[in-house]
Image (cartoon, rainbow, N blue to C red; front, side, top):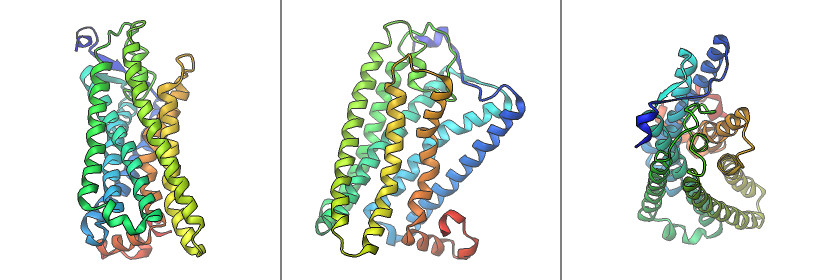
Length: 317
């Protein structure tokens, strides 16, 4: 990469000027990170240990938890270290690696969320064909496609972004290495090449989101035809949280990547990136386990010695 000769490191955004506030941010991020590790770790362990949960829905949920663990581990530990040691430096290669793995995991997660909406569509709208359309081999192929597509898209993004000449400095207005922030440091007009990659990726993202929306329109139509209120409540409690996470994820991410350059404020950029990079991995365990009696029952069996009163509150409600 030619830029490595002229730029050896980048400067990330500091959350506060005072050491006391930086320590406060450290403890806040540490709490969020540990909650994400605990929640996603429990889901992965439970699904892996209980063969009754070896179904397509839980298989995709296990993959989602793996992606969530990876994506939040790419951004928060570095942000916590910067706040704790009052240091905002990140090496050139470290920034490239962080960007690559972040785009890889977040892209794969969005593709996986699209697959999960298809899983719910088949389960509710075509239950008699569920075993045929979502057999074990088909599930593995779809999950592998999500991971593989995310990897290739991230590889293209990273190679293209870090091949641009950077002549606007090395200070990034973000707490991790992000494509829009690096583009702001590129020379005039040279960033247009990377913008085409962003636009193409956004077209795929919009296509996936449209597919998700149409899937849920059919799901809600089918749910409203269920005569039992209990059945309707169960279906809505499963689908609405999934739709809420997808909407938050895609709306904030696409606004961050596609907003015009003149709409650029450090505080706004940080809030948007926090909403799509930190919030979903932290709240997904809460959303997918809070009302899932089957998952909570399996967790109690796996942990055996834990009583329901001693379990974490977000799994007991």
